[in-house]
Length: 393
Image (cartoon, rainbow, N blue to C red; front, side, top):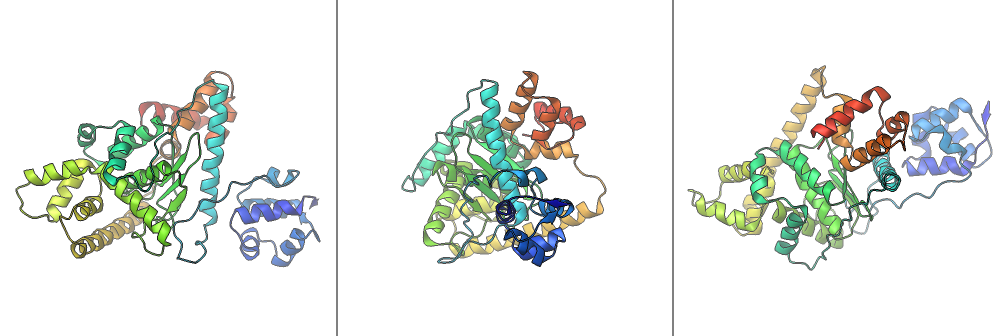
């Protein structure tokens, strides 16, 4: 049976998924020649072929029966571009995660209106001419986390949960994703008001995610949306984008490792020179990566560029080995975190809380809540308990 649909919807679904004609043909199992004819309005897909096409584009079949293609938000600027060249292509999976986060933001705004809850406004703002020390201090102050509180966390896993909680408290939706390679994306900032979005890569280790969170918060304060893959500053970027990246990196570093604390640490240190042991010691105290600390020593003139690059390569080699070993362990292990635990980590806590508030006030049915949260009805209350206990923060 043929599916009579508007050909424009097929083109819209394919292009917003970042797929070429060849790619959608391969993923759907429908011949390239047939898809080309269908998109031109010269042929039709069968209902079974439409289902396979929809699955390839990560769209529900119902989307193809809309009267016309919906307006799609402009794709986020990609900071992984070569100067005077087009940005690198987004993978279909990354496009899907960005789209999900944007849709959940809209849903959060609608839920807040239903339960009559005023939304927090992210009001932090500075320009690229703002002094770095001032910008970093303002970011930390805005999040309301003291240095004493940070020192008490003692490990990156705890620190990440608390920093995410602080960002959500000032009106930022923080999501994490599970299946995007770290080499493609480490952090995303979507500068919208209200409820700007930060997306972190859950495949990254916790201290790296902390830095990405602060980097993206700096983007939001600049009112600049971007996707970052953690490349070395200036590597393959246009001059303007490289300046923005350097600024956001420095602001994140100053906020996480304040200059005053570095000075105090060095004065108390028994070592007359900065070495890897002192870098590791300070990183442990502040629950940040060693590379962030090394960069702070560089920016303050405590080490030179040659030594920093040597340490940076060392940290990078160790990190790549860590990621490789973790993948091997995960492949060999038959156990892992439950889906509820993963969702508690990946979903914005503001979004989850608003969904449950709407349910408890009878604005949403249980099935509607499960649909919003992307999980089965039987798992919904397990997620609620995890969030209320703080496991997902």
